[in-house]
Amino acid sequence: MSKVKVPYIAPSEITPEFVGQSRRRWLQQAGFGVAAALASDAFGLRDAMSATLPPSLPNSTYQLDEKLTSEKDITTYNNFYEFGTDKSDPSRYAGAMQTEPWTVSIEGEVEHPGVYDMDSLLKLASMEERVYRLRCVEAWSMVIPWQGYSLAILLKKVGPTSKAKYVEFVTVEQPKNMRGISAHILDWPYVEALRIDEAMHPLTLLTFGLYGKSLPNQNGAPVRVVVPWKYGFKSGKSIVKIRLTEQQPVTSWVKIAPSEYGFYGNVNPQVPHPRWSQATERRIGAGVFAPRAETLMFNGYADQVATLYTGMDLKRNF
Ligand SMILES: Nc1nc2c(c(=O)[nH]1)N[C@H]1C(S)=C(S)[C@@H](COP(=O)(O)O)O[C@H]1N2
Ligand SMILES: [Mo]
Image (cartoon, rainbow, N blue to C red; front, side, top):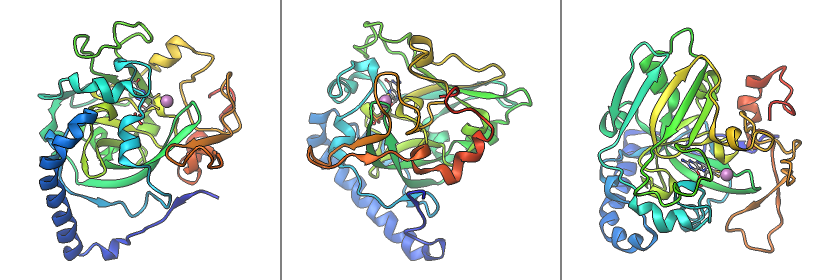
């Protein structure tokens, strides 16, 4: 049974009044953001863009009826190796990343290549709030209310050519501002990629915020990808380039450790990582005595995405 739950708000309930309420809630948050910015600076949180992040409505199709991970855990327990390999490094050091101005270049096998600034990206579609589980390969998980819209909206706008088989995501590279880059853990810039049908799947989210605020730097400001049925490493942060290609891109983790990290990175409790089981997960924030949770196939999204892999050997294509 899939754990992904249906509407906690039916489309019929999204009345003008609800939109009004949601907008009021948004404005409150935006106002609150000024005061919160002072407090949150201690965590290196970034709130400058929240004033321009449009209000978002809960998505009625893709929700999860699980307890949300706290904002504090989501923003202080991170993987962003450009800032160091310790879970606390990103929240300590990502404040140095320059996120304004920011552009995302869309290139390769597309009919309409181009460079988008944040305003034009934000205007492209209305913002939805979607609660997804982020499942990291080292067997921990969080449940996060993200804000964004389906990447498919952007991809359809630029028009993939008939040769476009893969979509590559490239993270910004700022050696002076990213203290982890000098340690050659990975071959920078961080590169991730999806097959085009995975990238076009409505679950794949182009993500601008979490908990009603623009993304903190440590979570991939100002724009990142979230692919909820895959291990966390597939969801590239702080994206500056999206390239559509005919050949399968060589992604950062596959390049450095091909026996440990596959191109697909689908959450699969039946296929252990060479150094640890992936059958269970530790919920961040649940407390040290909380029982580990059983990891679900495709992170609980099997009903939505299993057909993408029909006929594939998932032990080989891990
Ligand atoms: N550019 C970049 N993106 C990245 C990473 C990284 O090191 N660099 N780490 C990945 C991994 S391993 C995980 S688990 C998630 C963590 O996202 P979060 O810190 O927002 O929870 O980001 C992914 N995206
Ligand atoms: Mo991860």
